[in-house]
Image (cartoon, rainbow, N blue to C red; front, top):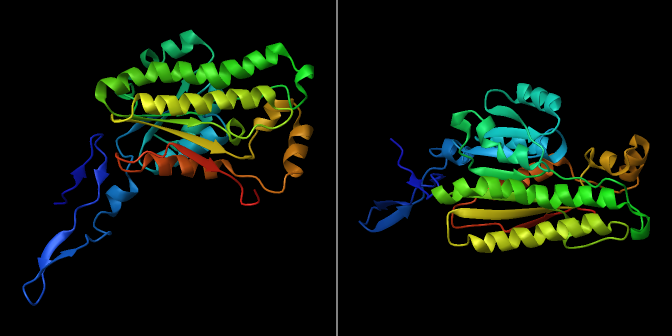
Length: 285
């Protein structure tokens, strides 16, 4: 029978070195055979329940798939229920769909009551929902309504869902929150005043939240991607041609799967390790 060290959150850790004696009777340490522990090492998220917001496309969809491959079961949430149902059908029994509007307090507050009982204890929260409606333009040409929608989704939506989920994490002293920020949260760009501002807010919120729970069983990670090729640009311009042109003139983009694998890497670290901020850029810069 394998003996595994258990972490505070129940994640398996590698076995300690095995003491043995050589031909001269001198005690030595032998590293455990990695193949003996291959299943626990490859399934570090086994038994964990994750909630992914904005899971109907792009980074959220790729992250849901990667989490299941890593052993977790996933609550795929978004506003577009039809797309979620299709995704869950592809992912199988370890995924369920949840219609969720992060901008709607009633939708968020009823989150747990709309889940099957056995899915209500959320171990991992991936705050991915966000948008940049209105396109890139100088500040004076912008729309207050569009800016309000950006801030409501990117900032308050993230805060609202975190506040709902973290209470149960605190009661169990166990949980991991991953906020999908942006390189724009530390490197603002022209014509992106409000989007950059919203991601600066996510950056500050993530670090402060991490400090709030430092020394407990709750970890907070912020992922700051560079340009990722998704349908995000479509929401920015509401124009397929402009969206395609935006990506086509860019030398290199990340894929949603790149960010998904980064998320899983952060989640699989041992409990005493927190990857607080991870900047992910295309190799072209």
